[in-house]
Length: 403
Ligand SMILES: Cc1ncc(COP(=O)(O)O)c(C=O)c1O
Image (tube, rainbow, N blue to C red; front, top):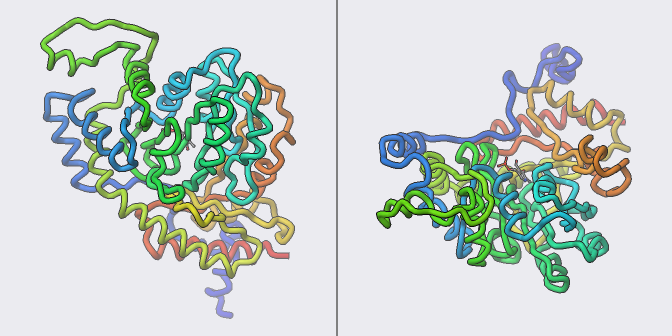
């Protein structure tokens, strides 16, 4: 072996040459000139906040997912808070969710003074396990918040069947899953309310932003009021009607998304299908290549879903490796591959441990997965060369840690 070739085999954390010269992030927005032009045009228009672009963006998202109503919010977190309110959650109630999610999913239950209850995940998809969920339903349960982890839809038929039997509201956290399909239906048209995020690492971005889709007119009306201080009309409606008069009918927030953001979102939405197709190509290439890398378990996909591939989380078979997940993570970062971990199970965060007394062991499947999880870079603007670098770095690192 030449010295240069040998140097490429030495891990960068041990002084070898990294696979890439510069860091490849795990996720990244893509903004083109048409996006910029759309934002500039809105800046030159009469409306910066709730104006025509908000309504256009909401209609476009509703049409895309196949829902009757879409209500925009200033973030996915604000959208979750509004959905928790519309679901009627209040002090004394419980809502059941998955531990393997971003904390915002469970936090929205706390915002309403209710208590989140964690049901463990299925070992394959890492989505909430309907059997575990059923065992957590009590007299206090009012809502279920499944998450489409990594973009793979949760088992919605089973979840809705349980909800129906017990009179519960299903708020699906689909912040990873815009464009995903479950049994031939688009996510956003199935649960009672579905929540999306437009954070920059998501499929469509508005900088910050979120949306709730629903077929229920009462939920839609409550959501609109909740995001606008609990007021029954917005400024544009009053201007159109030539009236100044408004009334606050409930306690709400300013959770509005601006026309500037929606102008960007509308342009981004025109590329969503292409972005989804590219993410599916990248996932297929990873899965294909990982078949030949020992000690790595690629994400499972059920035959009746089409994932939106927000994330590509691999699981390490640690018994076949001499290092921990964190050591392997650091070695991949050393190769300039921007890996990440999704997620620390929510009940194990210090806030949840302190407030609810969780000690670990409550959700063994999620906790064991967490110790093994690494998210590979996944975003639609990744080049074939970027994908090759990730695969090359994984092969290099895993062979260095193989027993
Ligand atoms: C599963 C999940 N839920 C909720 C959120 C919150 O969305 P946002 O960042 O738009 O507030 C995120 C964001 O990253 C998420 O991944």
